[in-house]
Length: 196
Image 1: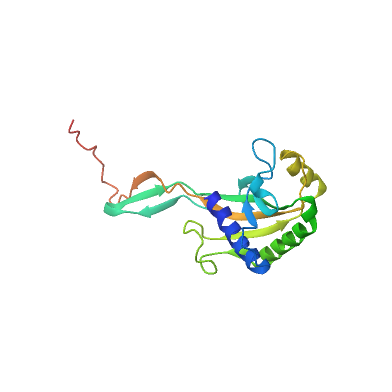
Image 2: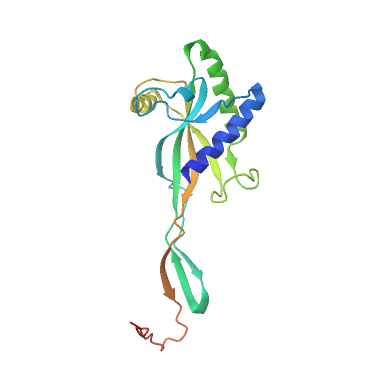
C-alpha cells in the first residue's frame, strides 16, 4: 500500500509539472537521493525526487477490531488495521548548472500540494481502491532535522521540503477469529465429530 500511495502522488505531481512546463519526459520521480552504491541514481538527476524518510503509526487515526456478522449466527473478527503516517521528502535533485531551474520546479511542486492537500475517491477517481484518503501537511525542516535526514543519505544536501502524508492503511483483511453469537443461554456447544 505504501508504494501505491507514493506512486499515485508522484504520477499526479508529474502530470501537473509536465503540463505546466510543456515537458515530454518525466520530471517528478519516486527515487532515493542515493543508491545502494552511495551515488545518486542516474535517473534522479535533474528531477524532482520524492522519497520516504520515515514511517510511523498514525496516532490520529483510530480503528477498532471489527466484528462482521456472517451466516448461522457467527461473527467474523478481523485484526485492527494499521494506519501509517509517512514522512515524505520532496527534493530538487538538479546539477549545479540547473540549480535555479530546480528551485523553480521545487516551488511549483510545493504549490501543487498547497492546492491539492488531500486526495480521496471523490476528487481522485484513479486513487487505489484500498486507499480511502491521502492528506499532505507540510512540516518544517529545521537545520537539525535537515542535518539528520541528509546525514542518513550520505550528507549531500538537496533543496527540499518535508511533508507528513497520512493515512496509508495496512489491512491484512485476514480473519483473526470466528465467534458464535449464542442466542440461548442454556445452549451448550458440542465438539464436531471427527471423521478421521
